Image 1 (cartoon, helix red, strand yellow):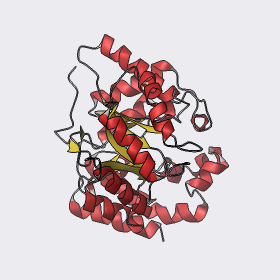
Image 2: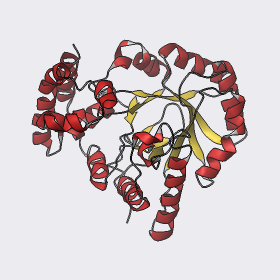
Image 3: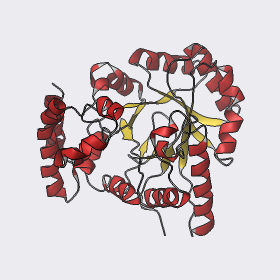
Image 4: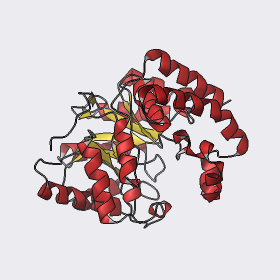
Length: 332
């Protein structure tokens, strides 16, 4: 089977030579239920992971995003295992671009260099196309971290440098520092969706556009709220953990405020023959032109199919603005 490139929608990732599909596969859920961060998800079996990755890649996603902290490398290892399986079983080569992340907490920049071979091993010897600083809190300065990352590029260990959860100021500083080594900051991975629009207020999206830095949006469906399932069946909210309810603003008032947005998504979904969640993803990858790409996860094959379906159509400019207005109204 030949992979579907979703009608040639590939776009540049930052100022790099990487061309990526508007959506990539987020792999946090492949943590195998281990580690402080990985325990957020239940343990997916290898067969489920294989199906999710196969469907995502066949559907047009050409990149995956994982991290060291996702199960202490378990997500990377699971991803490498299923890619090896797919490459041995299929008639074409499954070779997605690989993005992963270094975990900075309680570490210095020396750890970036000392742990890179472990990351490569966990990924089955694959090239790391984008290596990201997972968050800005560490025992080293941004300057020392960018120096270490630049050294990895120069040594051929990684291809490009990104960050995650950086403020506009930190992102600009990282970009400036990398330029001293003849490099640019390719991306900043942050939470962004129709119900979480901090980057539109705090200068991140403006700085990203000005500097040619891509925004990689995680949690693009606001923990499932933007699929409409909690509005359609409020009883499902009680099954969710209290922490997740608080993080995702699943209180009665917030859910009531967001209902008109969900109803608009449903109306547009009916027009295009897609789901409200696919409308939310389509807005995300088109409202700011090519600046924003997103990494929805999937714990079931049907989730993966729904994700790739969000790349098969394009909302009109007027529809994108309608969603924009409904989004801000929901956030008041």
